[in-house]
Image (cartoon, rainbow, N blue to C red; front, side):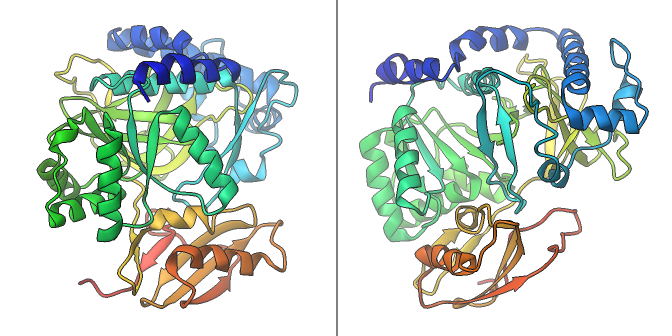
Length: 447
C-alpha cells in the first residue's frame, strides 16, 4: 500500500474513530523534544505532582496506600515525599487490579494485557488519549531515522496460534501497512520464503525481536541472500537486549542504521537510540528511576532496577512501577543535540530458541502465545532434549480440568506432536539471581 494512502486514508481515519488522535500529539512531543534539559525536567515534575494527586483523590489503591504509610503530599511534590511511595510490582497489580482502576471514569477505555518475558500476565486499562500520545512518541523516535507514518514495515514478531487471533492480527497488520514475519520458525526453508516475501513487499524498515532478526540474518548470510536492494531506512530491534554479537552480524548484513528500542506494553517506548548510538529516555513523558535493592537511587553509571511512573494515564495509573529490568543512567550530554537524558540497559529481557529434531529453531517468545493465557499465572519451560520438555505452571483461578490438554495442544502446534511434555504444578516458580523469572531454559549441550 502506498504510504500516503496508508497514512491518510487508513491509519488516521481508524485512529479518529478510536478517539486516538495521534496527529494532535505529534506537534506536542516534537516541541517538547526541542527544549533544554532543565525545561524538560521542570515540566515533567509538574506532571508528576498532578498524576500523584489525581491517584490519591480518585484511585482506591493509592488512597489506602498513602493513608496507611502516612504519606503527606505537598502541592508540588518533593523528591523525599515521592520516594516514600512504596514500589508497585507486577504481583501487586495482579492482586489489586480493580482497586488500581478509577471506577468513576466515564470516558472510553481500552483494555490491554501484557505478553512479556516475565511469565506474568498483567491486565491494564488505558485512555485513547494516552495510547495516541504513546504512538506520537513512537513516531517521533522513528522520525530520527526518516521513518514516517504509513511507511511499510516488515515485522519480525509472534504469530497467534488460533485462527481468530491470526485474523485479528492480519487486520491490524493491514491497517499499519506491514507484513508479519514469524519469529517462531527460523529454518533456512522459512528464511527463503520470508526473503522472497520481503523483496516483493519492499518495506521501508524492519522491526522486531532482536533474536528473531538475528536468526533471520544468520540464514541470510549463510544462504548468500542480498538485502541491499531494499534500501532500508533502519532496522529497529526491540523486546530484548542487543548484545555485541547481534550488532556485529547486523552491521555485516544491513547497510543501514540498526537501532535499539527499549519499551514495554504497559508504558510504550521508554528509551530510543539516536544516530550517535545513545539511548535517550522519554523523560518528557514519564518519570524514570534507577533503584538499588533497598529502593534507593543509584549513582550515574551504577546498575539499578528500572522503575517507571506513567505521567498521563488516569484510568489506571502506574506509580513507581518496577518493570523488572536493570539499567543505569548518565548525566552526559549527547552530541546529537537532543537533551533528553541518557540511559543504558544493563540486564534486559532475554529470549532464546527452542530447537526441534526436525531442525527448526522456534523463537522462545512462542511460549507467550501458548502457555500465556488466563488459566496460567506463571510458567517456565525446560528443554531437556530434542524430544523432552518440562513445563512448570502456577495455576490461576481460571484453570480447569481440560486446561492442561489445551496448553499441550498449543505447544505441540509448532514443536510437533511426537514430543514428551511433563507438567509440574508449583505455588511459585523460583526466580533467577536477578529476581526475574526466565521463562525458557535450554539444557541442550551447546554445539
